[in-house]
Image 1 (cartoon, helix red, strand yellow):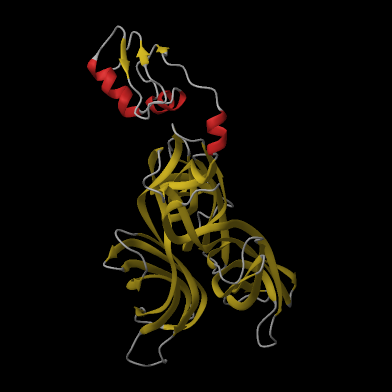
Image 2 (cartoon, rainbow, N blue to C red; image 1 turned 30 degrees about the horizontal axis):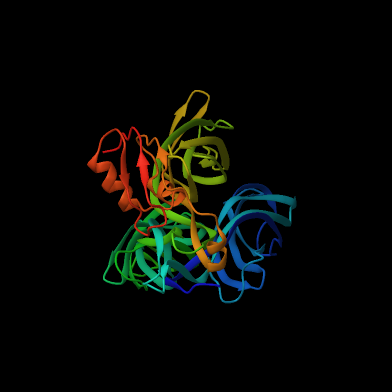
Length: 512
């Protein structure tokens, strides 16, 4: 006969799928008739914007685009030209457990972007895109803590465990606007642009996730008077509030995706020498809550036969942020000592996680203006290694590597570069518990069991599991503890609480 169980109910969101994927996307562009023939390609830079994120039955579809700018020197000489190219991005990630009711968080980034010349009037561009996604689904977790029949003769072993669960997954779109000062000479056009955004601080205050961050904009522009090329780096801070569901203390984690970037130059001859910037962003929030849960780990009775069926349950017992900094150095090739560095850019390529070690590839690019007015590109490929020093049963999740600072200095063999990188991740601790999910009673089988011994001799050592001892000899933990506190050694007796065993004798008891 199945016995009714008293259960605690927890409603939250559980991670049912996560995965990573990388793909290469290509596009071709014909040079417009109004632009000169391509002599050599200097560089390719671009902005990745997320367009849509759809979770379907068994798959996640991400659509985005790369607004790329190819800088090239004309075949006939003259000023550097900029050719805009749009690279469509569509990624399908196979996620068998996912369905339309899931809440999905996604991150995309450009690992590499380069262009090559097919002929003097045709350019092809390649974008290496990496995507990471997690899908969360609503969960109703029922855990037995006792029997409904409080008058039953069952002895129940109750244990506690720490459980960190996702209480809410939210998304908010917002716009950051700013004006960036131009030099007195002004600018006639924007030749290339790169936009990055990151969250720097997150707090939870009374049901709201409060976060602040920063947007970095790198522009290469052509001067208004002499068409001389120059670069500008600008920063804009932002702060936002997002309402989240949950009770008690929360730990929100927020990631930022770019959804649009627009820049307007001032009118030529106007008084306002500023670039109007409008940056569209999407903030994705995963809010976690840690609580103590109780569960029925075991039970028995000295008056009837009870059988408990156990099930495993994997719990996330803790999540903490991990941040490790690393500095790498190298030399850019080919040498460009005779030129002026116009732009210094870095891009993180592949990121590999092996236990508590994270390895990342970094490519640093320097656009140099030579004395003859031409432009060249120098590259430096570096490898960074981060060690997180994780405890046992802990793994890294949501790993990101970003370049925080870059420096360069001319040297005899080329250009020496140094980059400071920061690895951010979540250290996730897990534990698997066994909890009683079903209890059956067989009173007839109990009556047919042979009688237990009247006297039992046992040697109890320090550290002995009192529950296992009581269960084995049809006694109770309280009865054993009362006896062991009364005597420190020798022989003594204890009557079982249910009178099934008349006498329980311990010999050389060493537990106090």
